[in-house]
Image 1 (tube, one colour):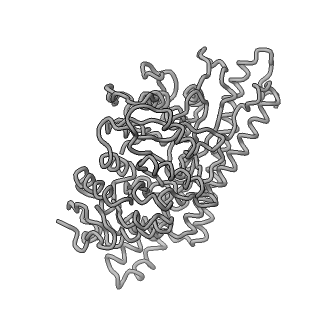
Image 2 (cartoon, one colour):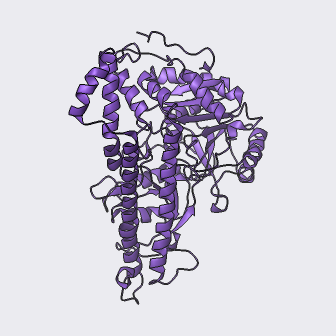
Image 3 (cartoon, rainbow, N blue to C red):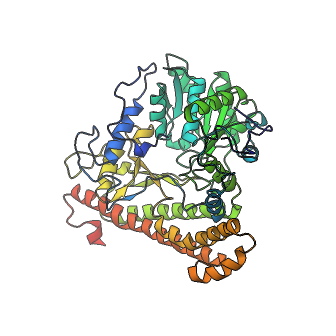
Length: 536
C-alpha cells in the first residue's frame, strides 16, 4: 500500500558503514589493485579498529582494554549533546498511532512526506547553495548511504577519488567496498588541515596514473575547521580546470560556534561539479534516525535516486517525519547545543594547558614540543584534535616505544579513556587523536528531560484518543503521574546536567589522562625520584 496523500513534490525534483561497529574479522582481504601510489587506508583502518578493541594492530592477540569495556569512558561517539527538542519526540510518538501518516505494515517505496522536499530545499537555500543544485534533491537512509549512492552514480570499478588528510574514518571502508581507490591529499597544521587550491594543484601535478573522478570533502571538517569564500573560490577554479566532481559532506553545517562556514556548493560556476549532503545526525540531534539528503546536478541526483530505489525500496516515513519536525526545532534549542559544546571546548583547552603546566614543573621539556597540545581549535562540530607529539620516543610499560597515535590510544585505554586515532584518517607518523565531546555521559541529560518528554507525549496521545476530553483527563491524570515540569525548570535541570558532564570531562583529564602521562614520564625519567603527582 502506498501512503495516501504522499507524493514526490513537483516543486523539487527527486530522482551504513560505521567505523567503530565493523567486526575486526569482517574485512575483505582482497584489496583492489592501486593505480596511484597511495597509502593503504583500509589496512590502517583495520589497525585502528583492532587497537580500539584492545588487540595488537594485526588483531592477533589481546593486549589491553577495549573502548567498550567496563571502566572505559569513550570519547569516540559522534552524536549530539542531548536528545532532540520535545516537539520532535512527541511527533514521532503520535505518528506510531496514525496509520495514515506512518503505515508501519506497508512498503511506501520512494514516497516523500508532503512538504519535506520544500523544507530541505529551503535549508539548502539558507546556506546559499546554488539554486541549480538545491532544486534537485535525493533522500537517503543516512548520509553514509548518500555517499554510496554518489559513488555508484559517478564512478566505475577501480576509479580513483581524492580526499583530504583528516577525512572521516568510514570513507576508507566505503570506497573500498565500492572497489574504488582512494588517495589522500596532504595538508598541514599551518592551514588547519584544509584542502587548498595550491595543495590540490601540487598533488595532481605529482601523481601519475588514471585521472581522479572526484573529491570527498567534508565542510566543516571533522576537526571543526571552517572555510572562507576566497579559499573555496580558489579551490573551485582548480576543480573546474580538472573537471572533477565533488561530494561535499556538510553534516557539521549549522554547528558552527560563531561564523558560518562557506560552502563549495555556493560558489558560482560549480553548478555541474558539486553534490552536497547532510543528515539528521549532527546539528539536529537525531543520529539514531537514519535519514540523509543531498542536492546537486540533476543528472547525478537522478542516478542517486535510482540507486536508492534499487538498494532500499523504502525511505522510512517514520524517519521523514522526524526530519520534518527536526528541521523546525526552535533556534534557541540548536544554539543551546552549540553553546554547550563551546563551553566544553574551552574547558578541554584549559585542562590541557593545566596538565602541561603540572607536568613541566617536574619533567624536563622534550624539545619545543609540549607533552600534549590542542592541535586545532575547533570552529564548529563536537570534537577537538589533540596532539601528544611531545611523548614520541617514550618507552611504554610493555617495552615498546611510542611512535604514533595508535600507541597513545592503546596506552590511554589502559587508564580508562577511549580516544579516536587519526592514524586511520590520513595522518602518518603523528600522535594526534580526536576527542568527541558531545556524548561523554548522556545519562544526566536524559534524566533532566524525561518528565518533560513524558508530559508532552501523554498529552499528545490524549488529543488523539479523546480530543474533546483530553484536557479534562489530563487534569486528573497529571498529578498522579508527577510529570508536570515548568519549562524554566527543565532548562535549569538541563544546565545542571551539562555541568555534571563537564565534571566528567574534568575527571577524565585531571585524573585519568594526567595520571597516564605522569606515570609514563616518570618511568622515562630515571633520575627523578618523585612523580608530578607526588611533587604536587
